Length: 407
Ligand SMILES: *Cc1c(COP(=O)(O)O)cnc(C)c1O
Image (cartoon, rainbow, N blue to C red; front, side):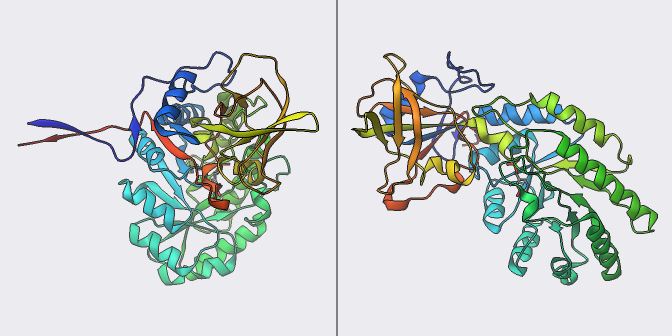
């Protein structure tokens, strides 16, 4: 009998990553020594994905929201190692596209542990999900509801409500969701059509700084749940409180247990029969990725040093545009007097500037720039514009499959 260790892509097993001395972040980070070693082996740019951070964040949110089932939203970092890690932790998954279905199916995620939450779907999207075995979908309008007439015996639906949130990075309620009154209309019509409505959902917006948005939304949903019962419609059994849980970029946010305390109080007001689920994305993965870029060249313009990196706005730093995120960025080199400098990306486009003003020591070509908190909405939205290749992903602390083989 032999034991073989199988890993699917490049996986490096390291002891739990050490915290860099100058970091005030609440995440374990790969040490500078490990980063230098990885660049020596693989070159730059790199995105170093630490699955141990994914595990810790999933556990922290599970503890902060007791009794709430967490469906990881794949959208911010659709990576197989993240799926494997969370599957092993017992997580469920929130899917929005057929590509995301393929990703979880390939990692062996049982379809009962998935929901499909894109509010607007093509018939083929619905069929792909049903073929996989995912049968919970989201609607927020009558047109979408009618798409399910053909599948009424196979599906259960959540009705998505909208609550505007000007504070978050992405006010998702501008694009999706309906009013409480419209939700009642949809649920009433679904009853006539013979389509099962399982419950309600909302998304307060990504990187929401205050839990009060959730509290307001939960209480509005509670009213709808009670109204549905009062109207004699089948009782709603599920409330999905979405994603949006914040992480500290350059600004502190409330620790997650404090953030969730008022949310739990609001959830306690719901009828006992309502099961609560959530769809965290950013919170699970943001801290798990450290990006490493190297200086390709430099110039002095209007008295300021400009450093041109091999990664930029069109690559791993795409979130600076699409996500309005602001990442903790620093040079690996810590010694030397710091002066105001500019960090530019590699492409020939002038908007490709990572930072207009950052205090850095004098850097040489080949020196490394390290950016933390780069896991969410970064790689996922990166392009290879100008034929600059996307950063290579190095996976640390992946699930290790150990299979016993005979012979
Ligand atoms: C993007 C998205 C999420 C994840 O949101 P985060 O802010 O990253 O937690 C969850 N649910 C839906 C429907 C989404 O579109």
